[in-house]
Image 1 (cartoon, one colour):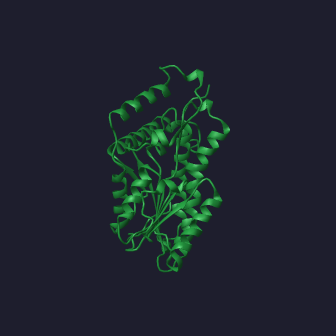
Image 2 (image 1 turned 45 degrees about the horizontal axis):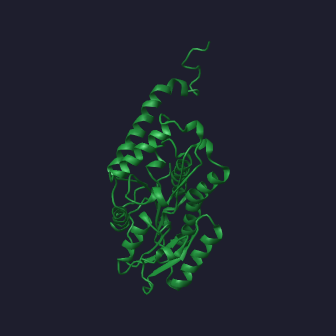
Image 3 (image 1 turned 60 degrees about the vertical axis):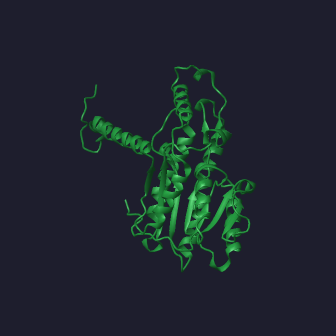
Length: 305
């Protein structure tokens, strides 16, 4: 692998943040936090800009825009609008690709439209915004470089029943981000960070989750997806999770601390635990299949019948 994020990053005093999915949850928390910083500039976006009423209309450092990441035209127009608003001084220093939703339910019941829309938003939307930002970041002379936070999830590393296409999108974000991060020239100073939150106290399950039509073959309470549903609901009712502001604070700190930006950033102790278990499990599995896997070592290490 080519090295990534090779040099310490220092957030400019007048940094411009572009955040998608600011209507609620993590996106809103980050937008509010950045808006509280006097010298930071904010481009807050949402599909419906009326949901951004919590941000000031009189502060010229704050720009509220309509942005549907599933639309290439919408992404292009948002970047043009930001450039027009900030004028000759326009630059993007931090991007937070947060827009997305989960398609939950039985995979066999998912329609073509549902699955394509899920990936269009969660994966291709991230791609569109990222590459538009990379172009601005690498071409700016005075503010060359920046940080691109791609919000993944523990769902981008660990898979659970009943959310196959959400996992597909987040796994895609992880692999794509790791690859494109290696394409950046060190002189560009463009840093990628894949953020992998665990349980965050948002209304994600209610406002940012769509459900497939139930499939009768998977309806039994003993089905894995139904057991997973019950487990999640139990923990939600118990108040498990951290406040979104905690995510906002750590992302700001990572950009502002003057150190190298981590490529992967799990958030919450649960995320670290689950990801560790997943990686340890993969290592153990490698040990059990290595004799089967080493097909480039000549004769097979197993008997053929």
